[in-house]
Length: 126
Image (cartoon, rainbow, N blue to C red):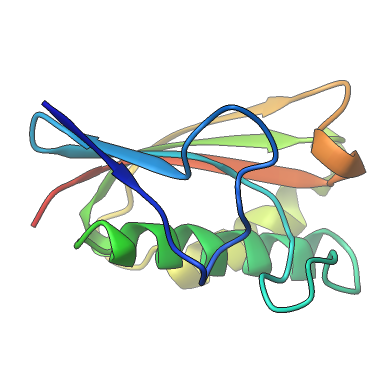
């Protein structure tokens, strides 16, 4: 059985998908991009600011599912340019302290709305 997760504290889905799905003891969070949910616009700044907003959005989705970033077991980071890796990684490390999740980072030729970064996650349910 699966439960669809939806919160106003993160950007709404811009297509036929859910912000997250809770199933079999896990939360599968869709990729988040750097949209400020209050304004519907991208945050100002470069990849560091975008990464921070993406992880805030991801955190809000996970909280709506009853879990936290600390319970994330795997992330996938999509970058528009791998040259942004160091800046993204510095911000990412501030959100994932201690036992960091497994991670893959890939360069994508294009991301939704020309984002510089998108992150999806799988977390344990609390």
